[in-house]
Length: 93
Image (cartoon, rainbow, N blue to C red; front, top):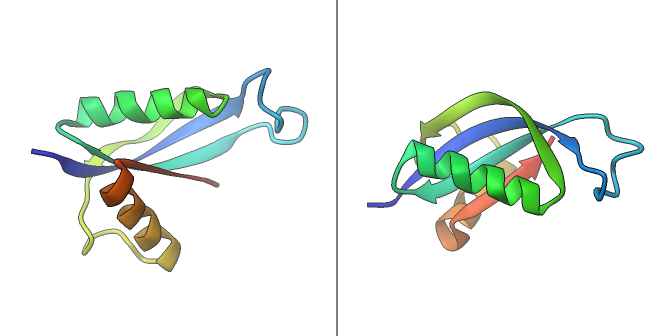
């Protein structure tokens, strides 16, 4: 059964990333629908790499979440809904 996980990865831009000269590091917030926490982590890391970011550290391990939990802002609620629809949502901070 698919569940929604929230996780945070600290990342740096790769050589191909257009942000590499101006952004030294970001926090990538993910909402991922997967069968397991491990699957959510793998999917988030792959997605991050596809967007030309390099994982530096896991700031928050995949944590089960729901529409009623940890969604204090409209942006986070929108990201949760996006993950429900497409399987993954990422927000760079």
